[in-house]
Length: 244
Image (cartoon, rainbow, N blue to C red):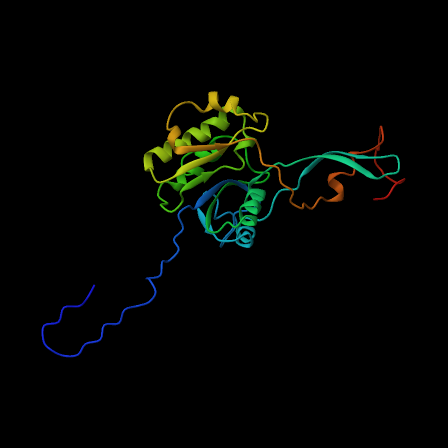
C-alpha cells in the first residue's frame, strides 16, 4: 500500500520483489504410548508415564532404549542344513513403530512409556489408570494424534477399553484424534466395529490390516539354539553335529 505524505519533497518507496517468507509450522505431532526397554533421563525410571518430546530415533534410543529380543519358536533347516524358514514373534512393538515413523520422514513426536519390558502386566491399567499413559497427556497441548503400538498385546476387553478412553479424551479436549489398529486376527475389522462401541467415533481413525515391513533384528544364538529342526527331526541340545 502506498505511503501517505503530508509535506512536499522527494521520497523513495522500496517495494520488495519477493513475498513475505512463510515459516513452516508442524500441523500434526503424534504421541506414541506403549512399553519401552527403559525410561531414563536423569535417573533410572524417571520418564515412566511422563510425556517426552523427541526428534529422532537416536533420541528415542538414548531415553527409551531399543526393542525387546524377538521370540524364536521354530527354525527349520533342510537336510543339507540350509535355512528354510523360521517362526518369530515380537513381544513389543513400540520401538519398531518408531523406526518405521522415522524411516518415513517423521519429525518431532512425544513418547509415553507406560512400563518397561519384563515389569509390565500388559493390562488396560498400564494405559489408562490415574497418572498413567493417556491421563498424563491431559495437560500437554502439543500432541494431536494418539498412537498405541503395544495395545495389541492386551486381551480383547482391555484392547477396546484403552481406545474408548483415548476417544473420550479426544472428545473432551477437541484438539487431538486417535489413530488405532485392529487385532492381528481381525484383518477386516469385523470384531473392531462391534468392540469399539459408538461413542466419540468422530475423533478416531483405524487402519487395517497390519502393515508388514522388514527391519533388521539382532537374534542371539541362545534364542534359537533349542528350536532348530532339520527336515522332520528336531535337534535336542547339546548341538554338536552341525554348524551355522
